[in-house]
Image 1 (cartoon, rainbow, N blue to C red):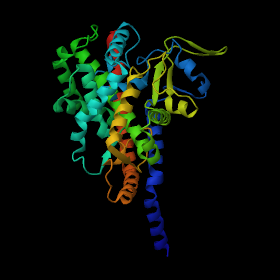
Image 2: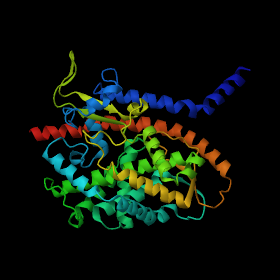
Image 3: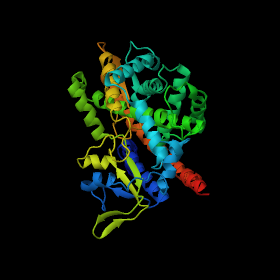
Length: 425
């Protein structure tokens, strides 16, 4: 009898793994990260600064330091290298940042109609290659499906010409390696990233835009790679995957998305629920007075928690205008909705997979040509749910192991600290 009871308990424990183990591992991973990183930042909103002062403090002119002086910067530089020292998001305030930011705005500025047209062209230039046989239903990973679209789009934005298959593969390989490492589902591979760097160095003379003159040629290649072919491709892919996942989970909403106003609303609510930014840290470059008896000293590291601020009722999908907002704040909504609209014109989507802000599963989805029947639709969606939950078990363990290693390795390499130490000497 005791043996039967033990067997039953063991079977129940194993069967219930997808419901409790991933959450436990995520909590453990966060604890490990906190232990390795140390008490390095002040959470906002938090005990010291609540959500009512989030925007005020984020916009404060002294909350403008970006990398120097924060241990967290070593981790972000590690994930975004090579070229983190000239990445627009991580440059310290000053003339170089101003010139780089101005260049980015100039490159990304275009009429809405042109942005819409370019996004649709980029979709059609890549979708047939990504999907393979377009006349049948198939399970796709939405982030993987759309990443070549954004590689093509931003290549056309930067170089004002279509992308070859080989170059697009370089861009996708680079962007995928960055986002995979950021989500701790795989280690970073600098060889994949440096292949893109080498290509960009060779074609700098082909860029029809005036690049920042304060940067050396290799730094200009890093600038293009980090701003356009890392961040822009990754964030556009994530935003599109989130929107498509939300529509795929709701047949009625998906049908209604042909209405532009409803698509606008779906996009806004998707970014509200699944903000693209997790935590953005800033370093105070002067004292910040919070009240008559409390001041944040210069050098304080503030960690602005976007998901928590959104949950409290705030909404800043592209950051705060006074403190480095996303330079694609106008371009991204136009182009993501254009790709979504065009994709849904010819295809239907359905999913039962988990949809979380981090989207580590890359957005599993059953995709079919519009107007065709989907064989065994219900069983395939049921299998998708089961498979996704069990994948989450193994994936969470991988994230714990690899994430812990990368945090340790970033601390060991001290990319950011060593860079600023080199400047001082």
